[in-house]
View 1 (cartoon, rainbow, N blue to C red):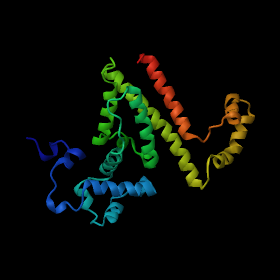
View 2 (cartoon, rainbow, N blue to C red; view 1 turned 60 degrees about the vertical axis):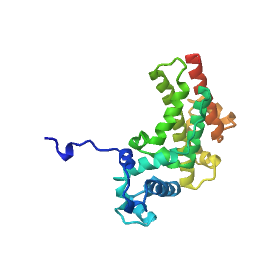
View 3 (cartoon, one colour; view 1 turned 90 degrees about the vertical axis):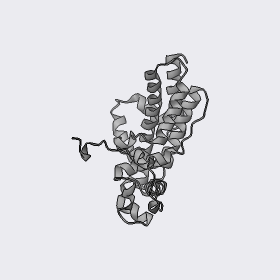
View 4 (cartoon, one colour; view 1 turned 180 degrees about the vertical axis):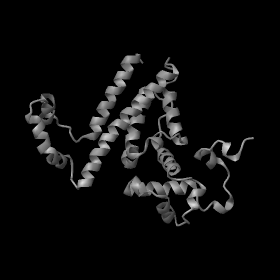
Length: 241
């Protein structure tokens, strides 16, 4: 005979779809997410605890558990909340949509730097708003004669570029902030002794040329958009679309 423990665990989103009893309406998923995102934006993910959340909400410590079972659910709720701000164009050419996906994801990650610090589980969470973004991106590729695997590959290639670029950009920003430096010049000054040792070995002539001739070392926007153009050009050339 099946027991209570044999029942499949409902996802956060299935549970939230259920009607909420009237006495619980003073607290809502929206209010929980808004408060948690504000804490993370100001202080980082490490500041997020269920107790801290309850304190900021002005509710009993166990009250948020009516909606989220713990921090994993909370992070999923936060991700969904911020992805509601990522809107992609409708009925546009595939390249325009993919470009918008990349640029607007970068903007989102700059507004919420903690997105680059998520655990793999939270990063891969299937939330309604993230699914909406994926659906819109994939629909822009539909009708180009591509099979489903190719469409998903293109979507993931653009997504991987964005997150790879933003992991580096976020790491640089965090390092500068942690040490109280002003900008990239301060960072390079601190790294100069180590970099000079590497350059004196003579093993890295091309990197040395970059150090002496590059003019956009701190232009993160240009670097991101240029790299994105190469990615989209490569997709277009490979698939002749």
